[in-house]
Image (cartoon, rainbow, N blue to C red; front, side, top):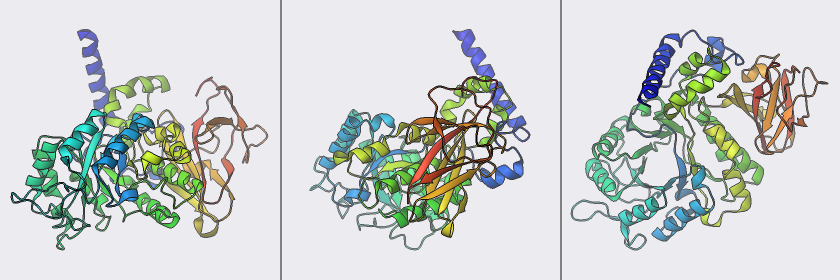
Length: 479
C-alpha cells in the first residue's frame, strides 16, 4: 500500500508540474475551438485568481437555504428547525443543499452590557448555539447574518468596528457561514470595511464561509476574491421575471472573475415563491446552474493532450480542487414545498451541470429575435461535453437555433444530445446535414456519423430547454 501511495503521489506531482509548463500551448480538448483569441472571447477565464482566499472553504460554491426571500423578518427557531428537517425529508440535503442560513432579524435590537450581540429572546429563546447543535445533528451547517455597517438593513446591531468580538462569539456558537451585508456603512469604501471581518473569522480558528453582500455597487468581482468566499454581483433579487432576468444579465458580465475559493453570487433562488410560473422558474434554475463560477482552464488544456481514458484516470487526483458548483441557495418555504418546485430544485442532471468538475462558467453566447429575447447560453463541461440552454425571453413561443460555431464546436462535429428536463437522449437524424428542428429518442449509446452545424427547438414563452452535447467519434461505441 505504501508503495502505491508513493507512486500516486509522484504521478500527481508530475502531472501538476507538467500542467504548469504545458498550459500555454495545449488545447482545452480536441472538439472545442482551441484558438486563444476564440477562448478569450467566448469562455474567458483571464481574470480568475487561483485560490485567492485560502481558508479551506468554497472549493465548491455554497448550496443551501436562506430565510430572507420567503420569511424576511418573520423568523424563529421553530422555522429553522423545521426547515432543517424538511431539507432532510425531501432529499434536498442529500443533493448538496446543506447550509441553513438565518438572514436579518435574528438578533435583539441592542447589544448587551458586554457589547455582545444577543439572539432575540422572543424568537430564538434557546439561543443560536442550541440551534447550531440541532442543525449539526442533522448533518447540516448553520449560517447567520450581519452587516459591514453600524446597523443591519433592518436596524439591528451591525459589526463594523466590532469584527473581532462578533466573530469570536459566532465561532463559539458553532456558526459555519456568515452573510455580510452593506447597510449603514458610514460611506466608508467596501475595500476597507470587508477585510477586517475576513481576518477576524480566520483568527477564530473555525472555518466559516464568508459571503460578501456588497450588492455589486463597486464591482466586487474585481477585488473581493482576496477577501471572501463569494460576493454578490447584483442588487437583491425579487420574485419577478424582470428582476431574475436582469440579475442573470449582470452576473454574466463577471464570468471571468471567479474560481475555487471565491465565487460570483447572483443572489438566492426565488423558485417556488409564487411570483413566476413553472416555465420561468425552470429557466431561473437552469441559468443559475449554468452560471457556475469560472474555473482555471489552464489545467484542462494540459489534461486534454492525453487520451480520453487517461484524462479520466488523471482527473480524480485533482477532484478535491476542481469539483465546482455555482451558488444555489433555496429561498422558498421548504416545509410546504410543492411537487413542481421540488421537481425543479431536485433535478439531478441540472445540478450535475452545476457541479461539473471542469467548472468553466456558462454564459450567453448570442441572442436574436426582438430585443435579443431568443438566447443561447452555453459552457464547456468535463469529458468532452458542452452544456447548452435555449432560453426564450420573448412573450410568445419561438424556435431558437444554436449554431455549433457560436457555442464553441467545430461546424462539422456530429453530436449526441441529452435533454436535462425530459431526461431523454437524442441523435441527429441523417436527413438533416445542415440544420435540424427535431430529434429522435436514443435508447442506447450508439455512434452517429452525421454532421450538423446547428440545432433548433421550439421553446415556450419565458421557458427554456437545457441539453448536454457530446461530440461523437465513429470509432467509439460509447459517449
